[in-house]
Structure formats: C-alpha cells, structure tokens
Length: 250
Image 1 (cartoon, rainbow, N blue to C red):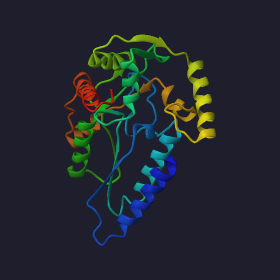
Image 2: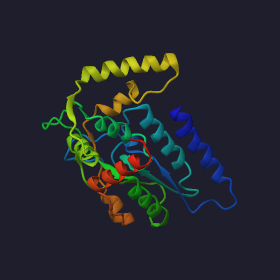
Image 3: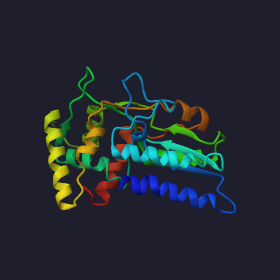
Image 4: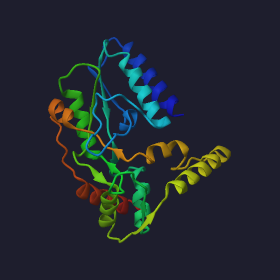
C-alpha cells in the first residue's frame, strides 16, 4: 500500500504533468526524513548529500517516490523536501504519544546514546507549510533535496516532557525494554494480518522506532531557501495541545 500510494502515485502524477501543454514551473515533492534514514550520531545530523538508507517500508516507498519524480528533473523543475517528525493541529501521528502522556504515561524507549535517550528533529506544521512555499519560489537547480526542522535537536525525555507540560500533567516514566517492543510489534503484525486492522506499532514501524538519532541538518534550507523556523517545541506543543482539547481529541 505504501508503494502503491507513494511510489506509483508519484509516477502517475509526474507522467500526467509531463503531458501538459504547459508543465508546472516546479513540482515540490513532500517526502520524509525516513527516505534518507536515521543519522549515525548526535553530532552528525543527516545531510541531504548523505547516501539514503531507509529502515522501513514507509521510508523505502518515500525514496522510491523521490526517484520517480527525479526521472523528470530535466523536463521540469523538481524539488524534494524531507521533513522529520511533524506535529501540529490535526496531526494523528505524534497525537498517539500526546494521548499517552495525557493519561499520565511517559513511555521511555531504550536508547543507545550514553544519556539513555533517543534524539529527534521536529517541525511544526505551520513552519513546514512555510518551507513548502519557499521551495516553490526560491531559485535553485532542478533535482535538489532539502531538510527542514525547527533547527534544534530534542531528546525523547525533552519531547515527552514538553507534552506533559503543555497538558499540565505529571506523567509516570515507564521504561519499555527492547524485547517488549519487539514482542508487541510481532504480535500486532500478526493480528493485523489476521483481521485487516492497522495498528500504530508493527514490525515495519519497529525499524523506525529503534534507531537513536532521527536528526537532520537544516543549513542548506537556511542558505538556499532563506528558511528560518518560527515555532520551537514549547510554544508549538502548547498550541497543538490546545487545538486537540478545543476539538475534543483530548
């Protein structure tokens, strides 16, 4: 399903655009940091020029979509945007974590870093939209790839702490050993296969959960696009939680 939507869907769209009498000035493909894969260390954020090494079917399908778009880079302007973890109003991904913290549960995943944490780049949806608009207008050669984030790196403890602060709760830190994650992912994958129901955790998603450094550099976006993020995590999480409460998601 990932490949049908992301890769084949992109291929179909690019083929249709190429047949237009007046092709678009530029196509901005919103991919994902998952297409590149995790970084190798806290002090070595992933760069756009690094070799892509996705660790999940989702990431592989996003990379395949990029390759489909890049087939047309000499016929029309093509640009690729790889955002990291995105949060904000209406988001259903990070919402799963926020909902857990709202129930006073602070899941602590095992991290290989000396601190015991995992580390993430994030971007608020408003800043992501700004980056997309800038990519449509800036001058650069066809086929370029850009990372965006709010410019900071957050530990998993910081991320969940900001969620708890925005919610006004004190969450119980609950260590989740790797074997528990792997067992749960194995069981839910088989349950999903048997019932057709999708679960947030499965064996493929495990490939994205286990790495310690989902972080990226934004220097290229700053230099080429003039992109400067406006929303840091504390402010963005407060407004996001408020939206969830106002719309009865929490």
